[in-house]
Length: 248
Image 1: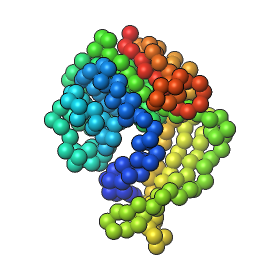
Image 2 (image 1 turned 90 degrees about the vertical axis):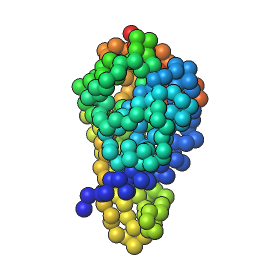
Image 3 (image 1 turned 135 degrees about the horizontal axis):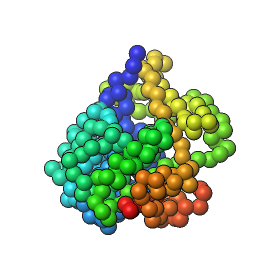
Image 4 (image 1 turned 180 degrees about the horizontal axis):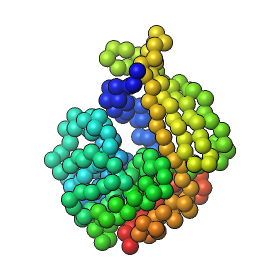
């Protein structure tokens, strides 16, 4: 049967990804950019607020956009400040009643959920339209490893977690299409007794550094910085692809 997305995905999202992301420095990176640029700040794919909530708690006016009602409910349960507005929606169809954002961000691979060039360009164009004249955009994607992209990942268990008194293990498997540059990630949730609670499938599209630069220029942005990590290491073909661009 389909997963209860809110209970098995949104409710466990922070615990599942804390070990993966919290040591990367991404929250501090985006918070520093927000402090540099000032508000208002727009985050696309805000999820449960792992990156956006600390920024909002500094007092900057913030807007978070996410397609998942369940993720936004988890964020609302964290008692966000009044200066944080939450909107359910997709970045490629962004249409807010303000066009004065100093900074827009798309952390933790949010841009990779756009599966076509049309969707990517639509998102970048809509984001640009919501920035003020000197506004900036910052986003990150992973830097594709050609050897890894050539093979699929077999089903692999992740560390178990507790939910409603049950011990649950999440497994993942990845199938990659090298023609479309897309990957199908399949998560299974299994109890300690071996019962399958459900399956969640996620599609993502990987993107290369100069492919991303081309998209940014087409959408009306000028890249300012290309980084390989959140501590300021210049992009060198290893690590992540992190770009900071300005509206032109």
